Amino acid sequence: MPDSLDEIFQRAKQGRALFQNRDALSPDYVPEKLPFRENQIRQVAQILAPALHGSKPSNLLLYGKTGTGKTAVARLVVERLQAQDASKQIVTCYVNTRISSTEYRTLAKIAESLPLPEDKKIPGTGLSIGTVLDRIFTSISTTKAHLILVLDEIDYLVSAYGDDVLYQFTRAGEEVKPGFFTIVGISNDLKFKDELDPRVLSSLGEEELVFPPYTTEELRAILTAREKIAFKPGVVPSAVLNLCAAMAGSEHGDARRAVDLLRVAGEIAEREGIHEVTEDCIRKASERVESNRVEDALRSLPIQNKLVLLTASKFSNGTNTGDLYLAYEGLARRFGIDALTQRRVSGILAELDLLGLLEAAVVSKGRRGRTKRIRLLIHTGTLSKVMAEDSQLLGLL
Ligand SMILES: Nc1ncnc2c1ncn2[C@@H]1O[C@H](COP(=O)(O)OP(=O)(O)OP(=O)(O)O)[C@@H](O)[C@H]1O
Ligand SMILES: [Mg+2]
Image (cartoon, rainbow, N blue to C red):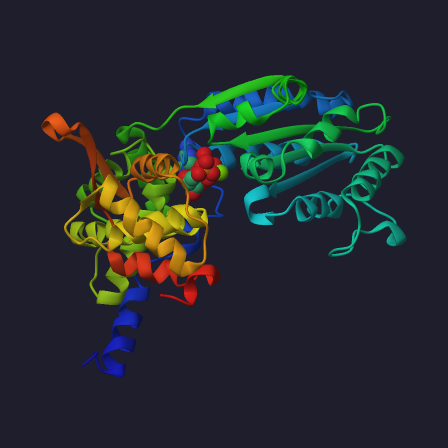
């Protein structure tokens, strides 16, 4: 039997006292200061500064693992640049191509930041990509705009749609005169450069900047500063912040993970009606954040990878490549999906292993050669939950 309503509300009332500004821990919050990124901030600022006297800055690519401050630095510099612009010619636009998700919506978002005449505005759907690009370029040219365009998580756009639109952008210099635009591309996937046409790469990567992971010590300082804004004094003991930093730094120094852990831990403490955030809250938060990470990874898998994973989940004590393949073929047939060759399935197993969703360890079978021992590493409950969201798999689950 759950707690009585009064108890739940009573705890919530007490718990709310833990936070003084919960938004400071939300994913969209950009802190005023970004310690340990002074160099990156200065370099990005130096590269973009020519826009202030009407010259086109170089295009720029920002790289680095997740949670290393790329988005925060780009947003901060672009905001400050715009604030310094007395001529009011600088137009800034920030688009996350993973969130805008389609090529069309990405372009529509860019168009929104420009002053397009009423009859040239971009409708929700219906225009060709070429027409939308034309309107964007014409607007930059006629308004003499100096556009600073931040394309965050640019790898999503490229892997889903190729680099055609980027190619058009890098070629549009003459067309947009006397206006200009500069692209700041951001990615945490270094491989995405391999998917770019060399001409696009050389233009987009005129300047490149790499963001290193934070050290645990740096994460601790970042958390301490954020904790002061977000929580009431004395609510988060320093040992708890240390644990949080250590856990967020265990793979690579990921500030996003650190901030997420702290927020979720605060929410857990609130729900439990306790007066401070404890180490136990951080551990519970870690489990929750980790399971969100797994769910996100599962959601973005291609259908065949999902099928292989589902097959592996049928063997509660693990299995080997041969037996897994037979079961996979059977399952594919039931779902009405064409089965891949054993070789391709081996490739998928290696990818799933890399993502930490299952373990595919090579074992020797003596004279009979080698096989792989396959073992699921995630809860079957999580797997079924996410798989049930997939319409292709839903019917049979
Ligand atoms: N130097 C810093 N000081 C304070 N907060 C920081 C710093 N660097 C990052 N953060 C915070 O950590 C979180 C993640 O940072 P950010 O979104 O910039 O990472 P990212 O490099 O863009 O990661 P991803 O590649 O996953 O998008 C944000 O909440 C941000 O405010
Ligand atoms: Mg980012």
